[in-house]
Image 1: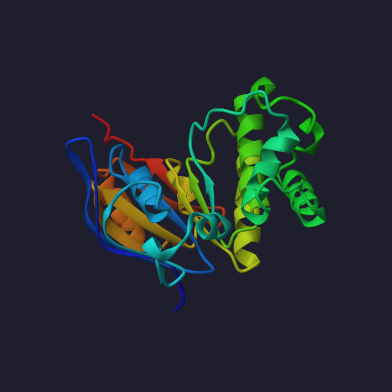
Image 2: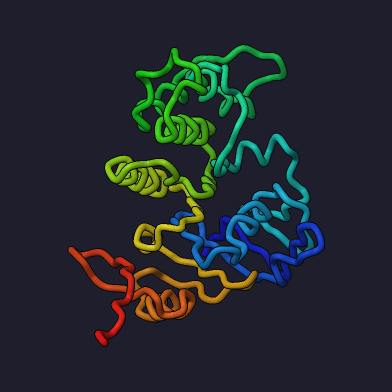
Length: 258
């Protein structure tokens, strides 16, 4: 099995609090893995540590190579990042924002080439934001902005697509579009890892990692009954996993009638 990302003994301290407590994890390449768990479980911290966006202790491997040996440029070509609540570049036009995803492939102060323009065009078509190419990022709604930032990540054309709360501000139809985009990325041989609060969406991934209090509570295939039981347990039995229309969904557990 080829690994996209792995870590052993991974610890992260933020301020005076240790958020991750010696996490061991292996994420296979060519699959979509969702990270889920209660608030404060360490999901975003783990994703950032795997992407080398936070100082950490322990061993992190990216595509089978120690994370510390990657240059910033190499890492930017290998990992496309979509964070939550990203700010800045409000005055930039949408097309220029998406073009930022091509910076790792360009020479210093070099102009975009045909490959860059083709990648940007494809990413904007895929996320349905091409119609806003001449608008400023700051003029867009939350959902429109999220689609532009996703296009920027796709324009990198990196094998690893890491996303933290990518469904923020997206309505149900565009959440379905996002699902299709992730599945196409994986079908092309890429790897996707996403932090999701939407448990029913997380259950559409290939694999699910459940975090609780800075530790991995479970890692398994989303179709595995053991994973469903782990979902219910990590959320204190306040949700229950059901099969609905051929998919697994997590619904609030009904309180017994009094």
